Amino acid sequence: MDISELKSRLATDTLGVVKHLLPGGRLEGNEYRCGDVFGEKGRSLGVHIGGGKNGIWSDFNTGQSGDLIDLWKEARGLSLSEAVRDVKEYLGIKSPDYETVERKYSRPQKPRCAAPKNSVKEYLNGRGISDGTISTYQIGERGRDIVFPFLRNSELVMYKIRTAEDGAKPVPGEKNMEPCLFGWQAVPDDAREVVLTEGEIDACSIYEATGYPALSVPFGGGGGGKQNWIDTEYHSLDRFERIYLCLDQDEPGAAAENAILSRLGSHRCFRVRLPHKDANDALREGCEIGRFIEEATLKEPEELVPAANFREQVKATFTPDEIQEGYILPWGKTQTKFAARPGEVTVWAGKTNHGKSQMTSQVMVYAIKQGAKACIASMEMHPKRYLHRTMRQVSGSLRPTNEYMDRIFDEFLAGHLWCFNVMGRAALDSMIDSFIYARKRYGCDTFVVDSLMRLGVRNDDYAAQADAICKLVDFAVEYDVHVHLVCHQRKSIEGVGTDSIRGAGEIADNASNVFLIHRDKKHEEEMETATEERRRELEAIPSVILRLEKQRNGDWDGKIGLWFDRDCYRYKEFRESVYEYL
Image (cartoon, rainbow, N blue to C red; front, side, top):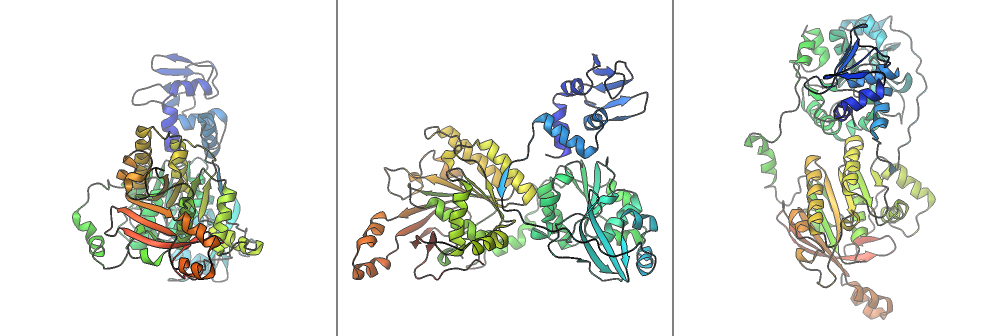
């Protein structure tokens, strides 16, 4: 929860907050009065209670003023970051506790360099960067190379090297460094606004031209993995009410802007539109950069757009046998006919022990292979058991070695799989809050809920089930993610048709896609005792039928036959070779 949201929460009980901070004061009309920010008796400090200035305060003796966050900071003698953490504790706000595979980073050695005096100083001065700005950002010189230090809390987290000449690209100084924003050393502790740029020299240019604290993203423009720095910097940015996105005015800059907006919040990310490609070009052309920052706007409503905006997307829908977006499934027969698209919910239904959870797990593994970031809420299974199954599915073997499992954790799952660590029943709203956090901080785009009946919803409470599926659909649409929902089928009905799903009819009605899974148990039992000749006959017959009953945004529905491999928990097509994930 960022500082804007914290202010809003505090403002719902302004009087309670100021009594907590300033116990020596008293209410006089619509103002709370006391002697100073430490709550001593007197009248020189006043806090507005209610109305348009709710929470605004001034101390007429010292000239101090601000909002409730500022008051908290002064009353407690804290830095802004410390005050934000303290407010969260007061409000009882905790970040969700995820069981995850964390990527391991190493801290770099301090690079050998000195304060710029020769070619680096000459080059940066020529780009409009003064000696004062060079010093503020602690830029170094090593021969003809510029050394950009990425510091957080005065600790060197990463650094980049770039030759001091036009057209040169900065490159990381070492491998496996933690992604970090450049420029924290130039951001005052009490800053509530910051500018984000696409390059280190652009950050220096903003600071040079306007005095605004400016940071640079570490990997330039573009979406996807280019903005994975948000994973590690998410909470560092909590204290900013306004984040100005001053990225390059080109396609990669637009992609980066959309990725950052979706995760840091469109309510506080303001888009700066410079009349030049980037901030340094604007600086050298004498552009009034400060004016463009002041005129920055929030993202316009997406609901009202010209039809022509969808021109290329519409054309793509007529491309034969090609899925344009989303993650495809592991089976060749479906790969040009179905994809788990953003903004949709897919229901996977089947009877007990017919493989719903195993199949969705295999679908997740294949999605991760395509680059998905997945969050699994498997309330029916402890994460260690879920990951045991994952190890077998990824390795394609019954007992992968410890060394192979380490590779799977470090090379395949790290940064791509998170587990919602709750067993038994979980409150729906709490789970969705955790999903939102996973989307914003880690960029998760694929979610599994196993199962609907583990969300505190009774089997016979159809209204609650309808509400639950609607909330999951709303989450998928608002955050542009895909949700896979596991459901059960009625025991008394054979596995055909969406009406066979146990519970409210709204489950199938609101889902975009519905798969039904049926395993022929009699077939599997006969395989156990069959003669060699009969076994060969049975092996040619699929024991599992996967049927797509509904696909709202596609043309295909139908069924495919699959064979279940007990050793690796995979559902395979006939005579399929083992797919290698590593």
